[in-house]
Image (cartoon, rainbow, N blue to C red; front, side, top):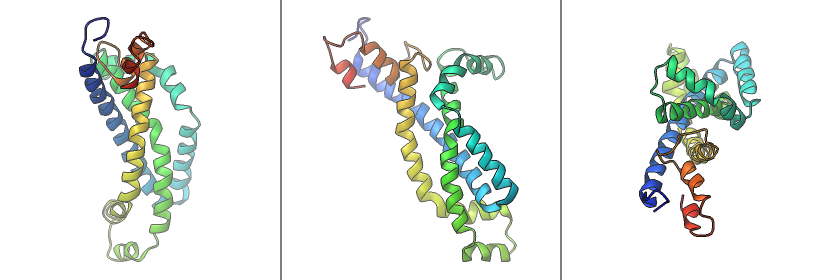
Length: 204
């Protein structure tokens, strides 16, 4: 137990659940945004491709962790006052999900764009065009099933990165606040017991 008498195993298990929920939600936003914009950019080319690539460059130019720290107070208040999200853990968790998701899609979009550039001249795309398929049908019925492998691989790479990001932000007191446990704020508590119980830090 910790200094308040709370069971550490149960807090770690609940913290894993909270951290994974945030990481899964953020990864889903990043994967969906990146996949859709990557397909559109790679297939259409021209001015659309140019402006989506400039948007990717602009998004990548912002340091993600610094933006998370700098915008936390302002965007959390916007979520509470404008969107009417309940104050506290839900607002803080939703803020982390949105910022991680909205800053995480550019790499995904670049990967998908490169794959679509090689796929759009293939015979099955030409056949779909000749049969009068709409662009939306070509994007999501013809191209997307051939992109599932990289989408799944990149999604699984994002997940542990976002778990680490959430833990780091909670450790810095930007994320979900105690008493609701996450891996980050359990780690923060563990710094009070570096000698008496090193496993308090090791397990989370």
